[in-house]
Length: 277
Image (tube, rainbow, N blue to C red; front, side, top):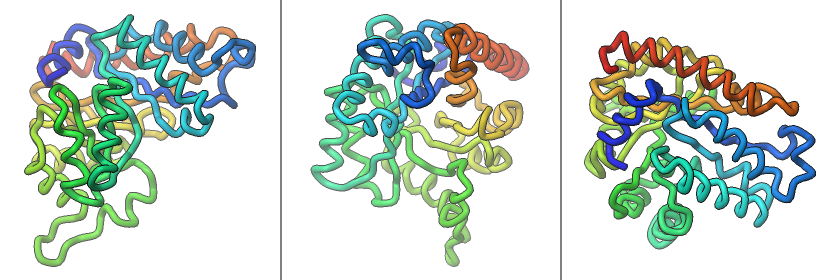
């Protein structure tokens, strides 16, 4: 999927919502534990309930890897279901990988060949040769960690280079643009750092930004849109807990649908204000 195709889905659905499939076996409704594959059963119902409002899904790999081989099977089934039933939806592996040489090549093969994700989150700390292997796959995307929403972001991401005056996250944005283009690279920018989005847009005006932190983490969707939207929207705003755990009872899918629709309606107004739909 290229940038224009992603933008067309945003226009079609009046939404730039990404739903995080952070599926925790300890939080899903108890009646699903009786099924053969509770994680997949939960994901399937969430997807069917929210797909009309959603342009992307983002499984967080930790929730699946923590269950061993069974969790990975659930993940593979989830991706296969999306590809089969909702092929227009963008699928992100929230894996935060970052290594060099053959290891990075194998990570890229795992996510783009074996599991057919559209994108994978990658940590930039080890530099260009840890990122480039993911960019050898046409139509696939790297989503590079730039400025995250957690409080620990202040430990390193705001450190300032004495010579250039750039903060570390600004150096990541500037340097990485020589590695890829706005057709194969996005950036993670946390919604709780929404005030920084204007500065970030000055550095990367044309790239898509994946923005976590809206909803349960307290980020403001309106602030994100005002500061981060570009001429092709340029935003995928993620909500996980606020949607998938809107209820933990038998009505969980119905409540997830309601929560996703509420976010989509707010996004629709923001897209209209920006004259993008």
